[in-house]
Image (cartoon, rainbow, N blue to C red; front, side, top):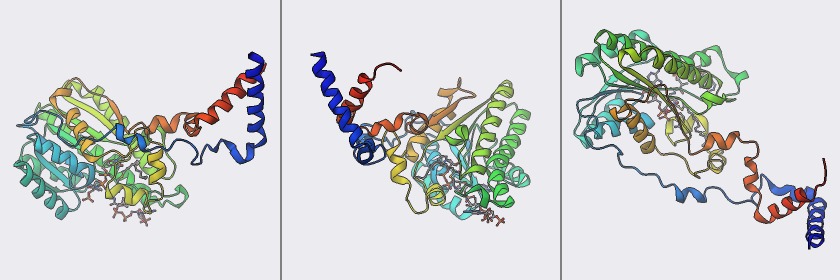
Length: 333
Ligand SMILES: CCCCC/C=C\CC/C=C/C=C/C(=O)SCCNC(=O)CCNC(=O)[C@H](O)C(C)(C)COP(=O)(O)OP(=O)(O)OC[C@H]1O[C@@H](n2cnc3c(N)ncnc32)[C@H](O)[C@@H]1OP(=O)(O)O
Ligand SMILES: NC(=O)C1=CN([C@@H]2O[C@H](COP(=O)(O)OP(=O)(O)OC[C@H]3O[C@@H](n4cnc5c(N)ncnc54)[C@H](OP(=O)(O)O)[C@@H]3O)[C@@H](O)[C@H]2O)C=CC1
């Protein structure tokens, strides 16, 4: 019996060896299980998750709240009762978003122009906010700038532009509000939106990776320092979620979308409504014991990219029979 199995394994191994070049186990080819079909196991839900009224009597500031993920977070917080202030450079876009969300939720959304790179503009934005709503209970640092670019093509101003928006902008908003909140003895939840590559680093988005890593250090540090003032600091690292702002600058031709989805274990991109629900939870009183947390929200993309053997997902059951036979057939080292 054992001899028969070994004989069969030997023949299978010979087949593998003789066609090694042709077969190459097609690790990167289309012979393996197609990824993406598993998305049906993980359908995104769009409704607000928290009980209605969870943010009644709360004021929330969302930077970059006029578009993309910031807009979705604003819509969810507003639906849950918050009075929101959205701030960024383009007042016309902010005003349109504010009107649309207000008319849907019945809760006021204020639009305030602010370039977060300019500390004076940030201070004026907070003045305006204090006059409109008072100081906020919830601050979401979501504004960002990014584009893919080989690092040897980056000018000093390109580097400065991204790091100014992402790291300095987040710091200016956080410090200005933090100081005023401390002075007024008012607690607050601060949330920063970073990326999964803030942790790993990534080529071709080096200013963004460096600045987002700085944001994470800032928020973890302040979580430790400012808990005594009633302030919580948390971080969400999103994986790919389709927005015009991100995809037009990171994958302008759409050439990388399929490969991106193929490596995500849940088989799909995230949705703005999903991250909005997470941001709402983290910013709510239901999460009052959460501080200093870094929450990766990426459908499994990070671990999928990290594991050295994960490409073996492409090996078919028939190929596994051959591989297993070869491995079992090996004697000694
Ligand atoms: C499906 C697969 C792929 C998708 C993967 C998706 C997710 C994976 C993880 C994603 C992480 C996402 C992180 C993000 O942050 S996405 C957010 C993107 N949104 C934005 O960027 C919105 C705001 N952006 C802007 O306003 C501009 O793009 C800006 C950042 C360039 C800033 O605008 P502005 O202040 O007007 O700056 P400019 O004067 O235009 O430029 C300043 C400086 O930069 C140089 N520069 C601009 N663009 C490029 C480029 N494409 N390449 C190289 N250099 C560039 C520009 O020339 C200036 O430098 P000078 O030296 O010439 O002065
Ligand atoms: N979508 C994705 O797949 C991912 C997104 N992220 C992060 O999510 C967040 C939202 O990105 P997303 O919604 O996709 O992209 P958007 O481009 O839609 O959002 C970026 C926002 O930042 C604002 N902004 C840019 N520069 C400034 C500035 N100098 N001052 C004030 N506001 C500014 C923009 O408004 P305006 O132009 O009016 O200033 C815009 O509303 C970002 O932090 C991004 O890094 C992270 C990982 C993945």
